[in-house]
Amino acid sequence: MIRRFIALGVIAAAVAAQSDGAEASKRAYFWFGIAPDFLVKFDPAQDKEVGRIKLKHGVSFGAYLTHNKKKILVSSGKRTVIEEVDLARMEVVEEHDFKQDGFRVSIGTVREIPGGTHWYVQIRKFKVEIDRFSKAPTEWLLYNVEEQEVEKRMKELPKEIRRGARISPCGEKWHVFSGDLKIVDPKTLKVEATVELSKPRFTGTNGLSVRGTDLFNHGNPDAYRLVYTMRDPVKTSRTTFGLVDICLKENKVTKVTEWGWNPPVFTWRLSQDGKRAVGQTSSRGSGNLAGDPMLGLVAWDMETGKKLAEKRVPSRNGLRFAAVSPDGRKAYLRGRGHELVVFDENFEYLKTIEMAGELQHTIFVIEE
Image (cartoon, rainbow, N blue to C red; front, side, top):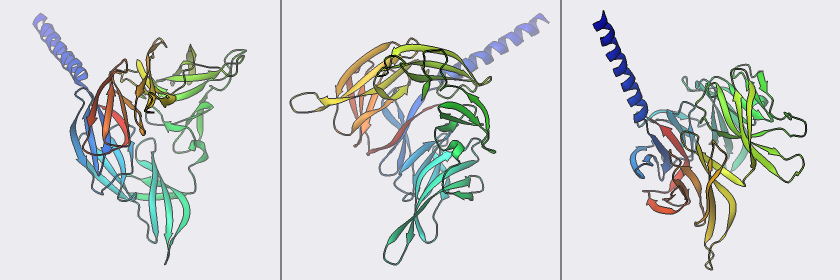
């Protein structure tokens, strides 16, 4: 009996070690498009391309990451086709054609619906006439992905999810951030619950305005930890910021942590663990007599609310802050052109990486 317990203990330890090893072996990669018709897998640890996928319908015009982060939906075929790219298989697995007889169509955007079986697809249309194209009303399509058919045509998205809606971390509901957080059923479009954010929590304060920056990277199905801003009730030109914790089991705010004055930063990007953020400030100007543009970068500790580094770095017209490495220690600039410009954690210049084609779309960070 003792030997059996020892054997079971050894097996359990081995399984635990394998599980820990599997977790430790996970790495995060960048995915983005390069001209003319490729999706690229880029390793930020080595700062080099490690794989690429060729699209089937030519130049891409937009890319959208699915909620489960397993596929990228790419608009191609002169904006008439959506290609489903499976990141694990490294190939295009499905093609969805939205051409319409008598019209020239252009896919505007794609919105995945909770559950992943349907999309909302925006279609801009131009009627083909003898001597010209005449503009037709824009449509929103309710599209069945598995059956590859349009189930409904609409002038606009349903008003309940028209603004500020995104898929909940659990993948089953719409979360609509419009003043308050509303939890909306994707089938009935009825509001199931509301988390009050716009109502002042205490006398002499204002409501909370949340950004899209979730420190859990939308990976915690039971909670949000969001960056908020709040207008100072006394000095109205001043805005404070901090973190708000929301429990999604009880649908209520559980904690608010104020950090002080809100820095003039936009385009936040988080490290994979959510503990460090890098952003671009709005300041631009001439860095020397030749008039070279400068771009402001700032790093923030998202556990303490302390600024870690800030610097204005030389840039060129068209470049902007685009990504942060998974560990939060490197910042990447990109824009018009085919290069990635890399800076270290103190925003000292490291290198310029020349890619094989002009960079396209958002840089998606995918862990595998």
